[in-house]
Length: 456
Image (cartoon, rainbow, N blue to C red; front, side, top):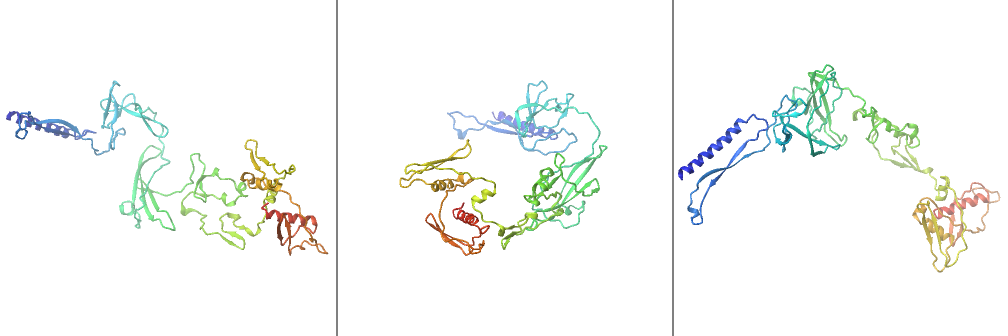
């Protein structure tokens, strides 16, 4: 029995050496994951034996486990070599198409059918992608790179870089020297091509020149572009959109195409400053820099409103109009309706609005007095829908005694003011100046004042 126990130890040691040897042998195998051995004690007893006095029977190999930790990534000259960062496997299909295979080995090539395969001829599978970039893992197909006829070489004409600079980067005050890393913060490199198809290494160096401050709320960076050992001189160009239309920045900081701006003639009645366009170069290159300042009102004139040639609103020229006069100046017309004689128990309902959205306004009797024209007008004017577009008026008649022009009639005869009673209310008027020294214009002036008293 002791010989058997020792033999299990030798077998376990042999298995461990075998796993270790396999790990060493595959140290250069792409995508290989090392294995480890798990062992367990052999322990046997029976209910009639005392467990504390039982001797173990040796050791046994429980399992060999692969450790799928992230390995190191290395670069290769094969453009089809791939690597996975994190979890996952490359899905493959066997040559006969019946078996699904998964691997971390990303060494691939193209076969005669332009399928991407590994060294064993197993085909790499790819998931279909919708317009939003979401992959459908239920729709897997063999990855095929279609054949393309080689054409004329085309030189690099546009490079688009997506960058995210560190906001806490230090400002560099030294003179730039591409051979001195302390004279710049970051750098990137890319390959560009000339008209003959020859490749060159382009290097871009980024130097932070200013931190953001209250006066200038943006960090400033300077870039230096080298193609090979030659510095490329900066040359600003007019920004354009995908259709070739030039782009501008309006005074609100919005990027707009030239076609989005109206002509000055179209918007002159609104504000001539809206037609101004600033070419999108950089903040320092703007030629129409304005410093914000608060507006002010002096003697009825509001200035510094930032409205260009129409800057300023003169409140002293405003005319106090009641709603009836305002609607009349806007082109509205009046309609007169006749009412039936009021009865003590009769109510009125007035309906207005378009046929598809009629709005009723009711005036119910109170059992004491019959609804009058004034009650109906008041109910209509108190309705928000009606008051938004209309104004209702009820005629009132009164006689003004001892009001007359002087011996020589003048429009200034009533500047001193006078009082009158209407519907039990005493009204006083001053600085009343009719259009002419006639009773007709005097009545019109008094009527306008009366409308102002009841808001139209």
